[in-house]
Image 1 (cartoon, rainbow, N blue to C red):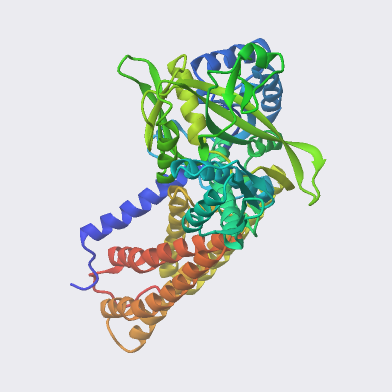
Image 2: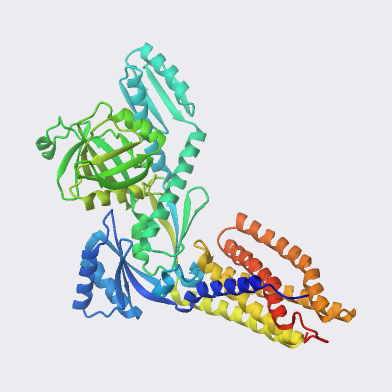
Length: 615
């Protein structure tokens, strides 16, 4: 019998719409003002931090809805922004420099919805408010750092080849090597030219020097690597702010754009983003006199550094390995139940570290934390001058020749080992960065954009609803049901996709898909009318109407979907937001218009002897 939908198809439509409605539901609950407390420099918030926060809020009579420890962070929810601001100021002063206390907005989704992954849509900067930064990478520092690494590499290579040299030091964009004998100069020139093809080598036999200068291609590679590495590390740091869907992308040759939707505390955001840190492994100078060093007599090849507790250690200036090569780090226990940190390096780092540690087994090695802090001074090019701060975070004994994977011991507790692993995993910026532009979108403006966008969607929906109801009568009601289901599915799918963010252009995409969804129903209903006018029966007209219109609807939607995919692939920012909602809307509108309405029509009018249709 014509137009009888099988039970499985009816159940499928109900299931899809029910799932879409379930995951669209969290968007009705809104957000709570909150204060988020995160540990800095490897410190992690724990149960003791939570207890301390609870007691301090109670002592100050600051009302709050709830406080919980989630993923190493304390999250306190409030019913109003007044108590949120009071709590932030009080906790910021009470907790000190080890913690970041940031304002935030947290979804008020019920626990039962949250447990099944039900979360509201992520809103972009233009809808939720927040901050946008343009950060500039100091490429001069990137080149200087690369030079430092190459000086060490040249020295190691010459020693391995048993080529005697007087000195190896930086000079301009290159490195100067000085030798004692002409024979050593010739041997070094021949060897280094073959090994380092991205350097230009010029020898001077008169003063027995060899100058190695980086090629333009090498300088370009250093700058590109510095930019890409900094983008990756900044993404990791942004996670400390708990931002729902941050945007971190490059702009030009040395700038990075960072958008943090929902962030109200710009000071804390800048504090985390401006932190320019790196990790270095150096040998402890066991032969030097620490007492003499404390009195100002530090050996030329060593440096006096202090740990967080102010304890001094004399370390070698020569860097064995930088944190650029660390790809993973985690804490565990060794065979004697002592805390240790397990580190994994990339291939170049493993080779370099193996060569550096083979002759130092049984000797102490220091892990040095280095941070660059901006000053008020500028260099000749107008770039901010950064001041270097160094601190020892761990001293461990080398147990064996270290390679791509190794462990370091010496941490006083498992918590200290865990914190060190977090710090190493966070990565190291290749070059210092500074904020050159800051733009704030207030929550009020964001809320106004949401309201105006919502009005546009409701207005477009209402006009289409009225038109379909008047023009197609009962079939118009079916089309309007499909339109409502389509809107629910778009919101539900956007909420389910982890990387999807709704922006103002995205709302425009939703409005557009409302019209496109109705367009498919108009094609089907007009084709049914044509079949009825040609004298065919009601059931034949319904069947032919859907079948004949299917190919037209499919062709039109596929071409639009291809355009949306191209927009997503080549576009950025707002264009991508529009393309995402348009693509989702095309797919959901085809489902509701072709499968959804046909199922409803078949349930109401299918398989019956009818003389006319209310269309």
